Structure formats: structure tokens, C-alpha cells
Image 1 (cartoon, one colour):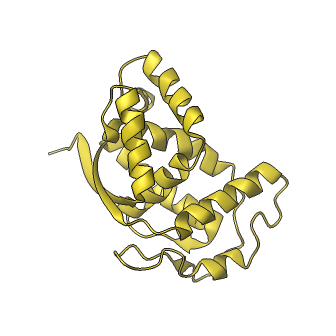
Image 2: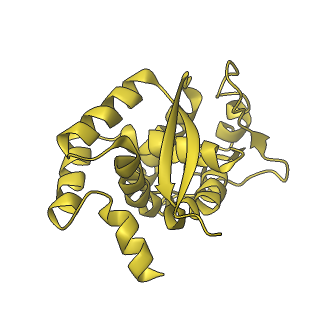
Length: 182
């Protein structure tokens, strides 16, 4: 039996959870819909970030509660963000991603994602590993990292982007577009 939605528990900071809740409230959606739209929004921006030269044994980013998310960050940042990169904006994106991953994420949040969106998570995790040198683990950790990276953006720009998506259709439009594109 195929599942239409996948339930994942992500770890985010309380300020990120409050921002996600506020974005959802402002757009008449639930937090899962906003997270799915945010994931679709952040995937292209992760692709333009330059990849580190990663050692064969990439550092592992712990996902267990109470462990520092920055363990292994020194090894990844030793290569220097944007090594070989041509763009300062891409370098800033890598630094923002590293800062997000280094901050503790004490709050657990359960989200429901459409299956086509959840299917992107292994690819997102691989891209984050290529960019940072940190192997982030399961799909929920990939979603946590991508969601936290997206939420680290300017809140007004996030709200404006969601407004554009929701003006064109119902909440969760990004997930509907994936179904059409597949």
C-alpha cells in the first residue's frame, strides 16, 4: 500500500519553531505545509552552493538529543568554505549552512510531508554532505538541516515567497507541483 504522506520528526531551535508557526499562521497553512514549501524553496539554493573537498570518511553530524551538532565541524571547515568557489554569495551560503548546523536544535517537531517531497530528502542529505563535509544521517536529519537553513533566511523574504506560492493556489502548492512534474 502506497503512502500519500510521510511522518518525520525533526529537530529545530525554539526560535525556528516559532518562526515556522508564525509563517504557517500568516498563510493559513499548517506547519507541515509550510515546511514542504520551504524544502522545495531551499533545494535549488543548496545546489548552487560550492562543495567542499571532502575526505573519504566524512564527519558524522550527530542527531541524538543532547549531542553537539557541531562535532566534526572543525574537520569540515578546515577545507575553508567555498574553497575553489567563484562567488561570495555562495561562500556566504555555505557559512550560513555551517552556522545553522552548529547551533543546538533542542525542540522536536513532527511534520507530515507529501511522499514526493519526502523522496527528495536523501538527495538533500547528499548535497548537504557535499557542501559541508558533514554526513547528516537519516531523512529526518536532512529535513532538519534543510528546514533550519531555509528558516535562517530573512523572515520577510520567506513570507513573501510563501505568499507568491499561496497566491497561485492552495497551501502546499509546491507539493502539488511535484506531483505534476513527476
